[in-house]
Image 1: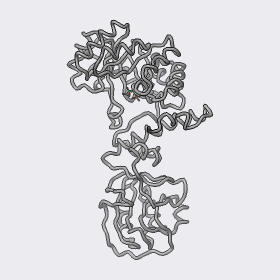
Image 2: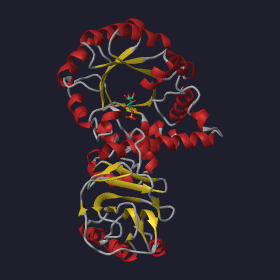
Image 3: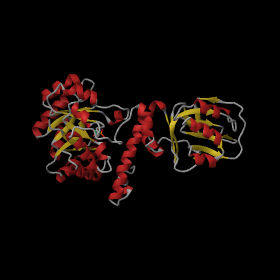
Image 4: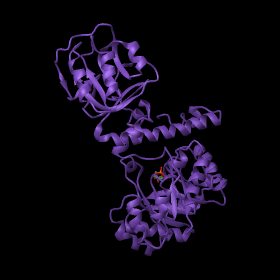
Length: 429
Ligand SMILES: O=C([C@H](O)CO)[C@H](O)[C@H](O)COP(=O)(O)O
């Protein structure tokens, strides 16, 4: 079976899409997809432009048509597409109109099952109407929740004779699974478009297909809940904030030393200024990898010091966050134990035992529930709700990957952020 590799150029700026298209073709990509974001941003001119640059390459227009099939297919065909995409969720009449228009204008029609609960029943009809391919697709928004296309792909591929495409988080590691599950058209977006070197990324995915082997990658993978920690340590607090619609972090707390990194689940403590009993008891309750978050009223005396730090290190606790004061800062720094605090001072208080452990806290207006993920670095502290951790982390990974590519474009083209991102064009009108 010949397997086609198609890169989805999911950019909003044509100049960036063109560069990745060139790199991808050099890397062995067979088909170029003018992605939906590019079509929305640049219209049919994106297809025209790509056609002029790549006269002999198959161009797929990811129109994601939901209605007015005839008109949209005509536009795509006349702009230079070879294949255009209609949604399986569209009305039967729309899909059939697309297919008929495709015949009239000489293009093929691919039907995208990004969301169609009845696709297994409808697949045979779609094939009978004359679709050229059926695409099993996990939406980017669903990928963030750890979903993949493989189970549906497996079920659909046995039901039709037309080629089955797959899209949704395909990378050099899982592409072999996609081929084994029956896909003969592999649609890859982020793993190529966000790669620092798109040519090398395309080559790697192509090799994985041709050599039928998994090529490990650390990026372009979406995590499930149990893999959150592994991914979180790769991220910065800025990635998490960007990925979660610019969520705010805890303010007014500072790292005790630079190049700090803290990541773990919160064990929360409420105590009173200087009362270090509950903080110390929390160390014994905490598990390996946890972060102790102490609300000591924002004032001194200190509730944490060197001996508490030694105890926390014995338990392999990831760090401590103190809305209050700490002391013995030089020793803590030497021990490289991550501490965020509001104040540093020499005086400690008494262990009186007021307060509670593992109750919800609110620090600088940010709520922290026991078990929530805490990520801290030189920029500050982010609190990631436990129930949404996979989504926040996956969005954060997406931001990290995008930034890697943008940095590469700025540096290699001796360009600027303004130019690469076309900031002027995207200023709010
Ligand atoms: O079609 C796509 C999506 O709906 C945005 O338009 C993507 O091209 C497709 O999901 C492939 O991208 P990755 O999931 O990043 O590989």
